[in-house]
Length: 429
Ligand code: CMC
Image 1 (tube, helix red, strand yellow):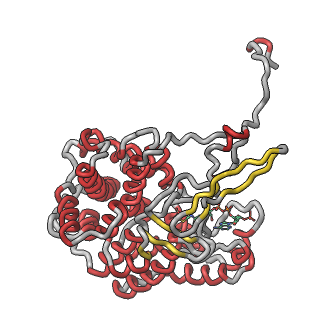
Image 2 (tube, helix red, strand yellow):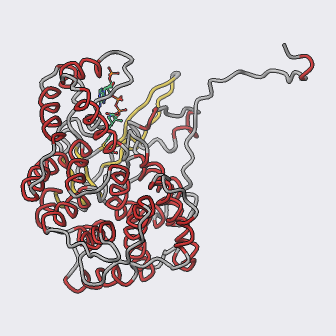
Image 3 (tube, protein in one colour):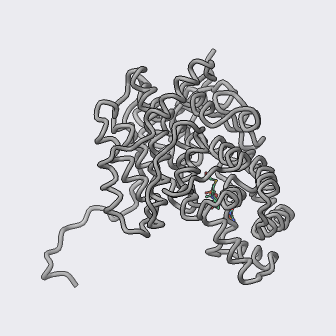
């Protein structure tokens, strides 16, 4: 028998269905509440609101669990690669060898951007933020492939996904080259996805860059860990924009903007800024932590805390190990890692952080990995976006294909002035 919850208000009781997920998560279905009672629910920041049912990613924030399509993130980070994980996230199953080879082939086939898109780059100032360029260029991509902007059909969907994933990497590297005043580098046909990105970032017309295996593996891990994270701010943006039947490119371009902010994807930049400030000022870590804890402080311990994880973010654990590994293997010394490790230790033993269950999140260590690869800080959030592409594509598609889907249109409780008369300008005080 299906479960229900009861809500009593103003002498009447309403019975509300309880929806139970495959991992026994429970949610009260309030979709009929307003028509039955006139009441809506109010939930600032949607912290306690399920916006959809989804088969893509499972998180248990209390236990620190993250799985894509049921498979633990630790196994994927250790045993898989980004392209295979992207296939899993987008299409729902691990690919066979043949399917994987077809998908890799499509990624290679579609890695070039249309030559006339190069002109679009010329319109940006050299110091234009790469996230602004990325968002604008993704929207532009849609204009070049109008037949694929609404890829409902399965055969179109695979090509559209591959095109987007592949071209985003080319655009990202090109935006970096533009910011450096360097010539754009064409992608290669004979190297893997992360290697090709590093090639386009760091090769010069007269000198090919051959990234070390450790750098390729570290970047691949970084991308795997960012591939999806259920209904966060940018993913909810993809679903929100997509719910109006906006096309895949427009929806993903909006998500890039949502990711840009320092409380979301921009946190990896904010962490490095914070660690650099601490180092350059020679500030005592305990003193910095005291400042963070002050009521009304504008300072936060960036890279700490998470809306869902009330335990270690499993991605942070993997990246912390990856940091040590890549720095050791590449022989890079980074004073910021030392500060990060000490800061983590101070925070994890501080009552303020313990009480609020604030642990390191994915961004606490990701910037240090990217620095070791030579990726400049302005590109960090772009790197997050490249990694998140499979998740955005999968979530857009899931929303689009849901027969029960309706346009996202939340309600509000109005708190402004009640009815008043218009006053002509001459009579206003
Ligand atoms: N430093 C200091 N205090 C914090 C922090 C922090 N990083 N995070 C939360 N708190 C405090 C907050 O002040 C509040 O205290 P009080 O109860 O006394 O008012 C309490 O913890 C709960 O915080 P909240 O702001 O209500 O939590 P939230 O779920 O709304 O915000 C968050 C989550 C990630 C935005 C927040 O923890 C934060 O700003 N962290 C720093 C930015 C960051 O690292 N963001 C990356 C998130 S992971 C990657 C991604 O998903 O994009």
